[in-house]
Image (tube, rainbow, N blue to C red; front, side, top):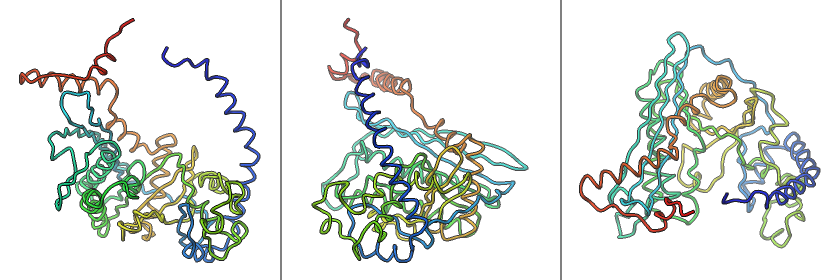
Length: 402
């Protein structure tokens, strides 16, 4: 056994004891956050947020803070479309430099004419042009691997969803779902040059959003992203600005509190709590929260009319975060349809949207699949009388010495 669990059992027990000791403090912070959410003045809070220079991501407010909206009755006949993806990253131990993206596709129609279509679309990428993003104005390039490959996969998932929506019955209410966030978080900051964001966002992700928006103008079509067990604290961070938590007219975290340690800042009375905890204490089964707006820098800079809105939703088994573009959030009919159909999907899927679950099953690449993929690559090379090689490190992992 490579990992001796007996040697860390006591460490795990100590970690659990520390968590238990902090539970009372966390309960106090949660109670304070819920009280702030229930009594804060949203207009004043939003005005202060706009003037503040905070070091944490806050949610923009659309009006109310503590609203509770029961699930509308879903239509009898509707369609749900879902995509999910997985990939095999570039492996330097493989004889050929390549990567694979597999997109799972699901279309389920409910009502008087029930039917379902489940499939996957794998694609192999080889060659220098396919394995990197190049700057058309210079010799600079970035390899498509790691986080960048994940971003490319997200682009292809949304493009696939748009293509599926185009083929679907325009007369039926249709919910298009993706697993995870609509925000391409990995492209934010200074990690990548502008030509990478241009290729993936402006030439890939955003045109797919625009295609879905254009279809939604003439048919009942909504797009949403479902995030299970979200770890976001955007709304709680906005509550930190309330006058009972932040005594300043406009927050400036670096100037006023930059020298204070965590736990000493005035707003730390609501810190350490996630949004799902707060709304878990507020919402009943099937209810959603008010709408909020992400203030992520990448969304504010690039997304424009596709600005990401979100609400929290009690699906019974968990508190989910549901994201949607602005053109869904600001259309009452599409917003209600999104709410109703996600609740219905979760009830059909035992607490999780059944269409996303099925799309994941179509997309998943198992350990066995990865080994079969490697063998197929090596066999194809041998068939062309090309050298098949690997690193000595990888070779040693395949051999049992003792």
